[in-house]
Image 1 (cartoon, helix red, strand yellow):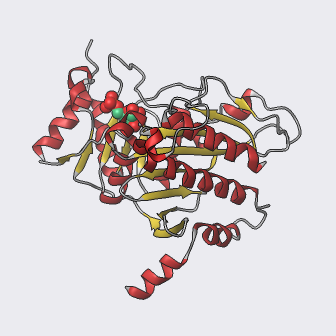
Image 2 (tube, helix red, strand yellow):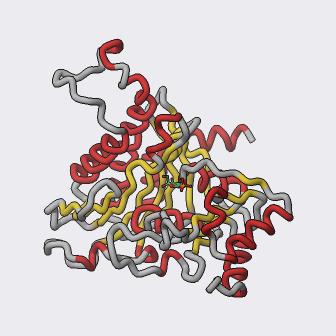
Length: 335
Ligand code: P6P
C-alpha cells in the first residue's frame, strides 16, 4: 500500500545499515563502513557500465584521456574501483578477486575483514547490453588483528561468511545483501545517487516454474541432470537462461526457480568459482529459505583448497534443488 511504499522508498541503504547495526550490539561499525565502501564502488561501476558503449566513441564525447589510452575493459575498471574502495576504507586486510591471480594482501594488519569478489561477472555480456553483476563475500579474518594474514584467513568455507551480496546492473541497478539476518534488496535512484530499500526481507519461493541451464551442453551432463531437465520439460516449466549468473539468480530468487551449472566435460568441476561466485549466492539463497549444493555437498560447507577453484552449482527454490539431489543420489553415474 502507499504508506508502505512511502515507508520503504524513504529508507536509504545508509540509513538501513545504521538501523541494522543495532542488531549487532557489539558492532564497532567497521562492517557497516565496509558495506558502504562496497555500495560506493557499485555506484561508480554502475556509471561506468552505463557509459561503456559511449566511452569507446572517444573524441566525439571528449572522452579520450590525455594518454589516448585504449579503453580498458569494464571488468578491469570494475576491479580497480572495488580494489580502491576496499583498500581505502581501512577495514579490509586481504582481497581475493576473480581478476587477480594471487591474494591481494593490503598490508593493513589492523583490517578485520577479508573480501572475496567477482567485480563484474559475465563481462562477455557487456558488449551485447545484457545485465551483469558484482558478487561479494565478506569474512572475518581468523588470525589475530595486527598479525600478517595467512592462508587460514583466506581458505574459509562459505559457512564462515559474515556478509555477502551482489549488485545487478540491469534495467535498474540493485544491491542485494545479507549480514546473516535475512536478505534485503535496494534499488539505485540515479538522480539522487542513492540506493533505496525496495525489496525488504526477500524470500525464495519454495517451488518454482523456471529452470535455468545451458541446454547447449546437454550431451555433457551426468544422467541425473539430464533426467531432471527431462522432468522439467514434461512438467512444461519455463526455460529461462540469460547466461549471466547474477541476472539468472536474481530472477529465480524473485519468481521461484532453479539455476544449474553442472560438471561438464570441458569443466569437470563445473564452471563457476567457489570463493567469489557460489559462496555468496549460496548464503543469500539459504537466508531467503532456498538451497545451494554442488550435487552432493552444501556449497557453504565446501572447504576451499585453491583460490580460483570451480564448483558445480545447483541453486534456487528448495523443493526444486531437493528434487535434483534425490535424482543424483538415485541415478547411477554412467561408467
Ligand atoms: P555458459 C558468465 O561467463 C558466467 O560466468 C556466468 O555469469 C554465467 O551464468 C555462466 O558463466 C554462463 O556460462 O557456459 O552457459 O556460457
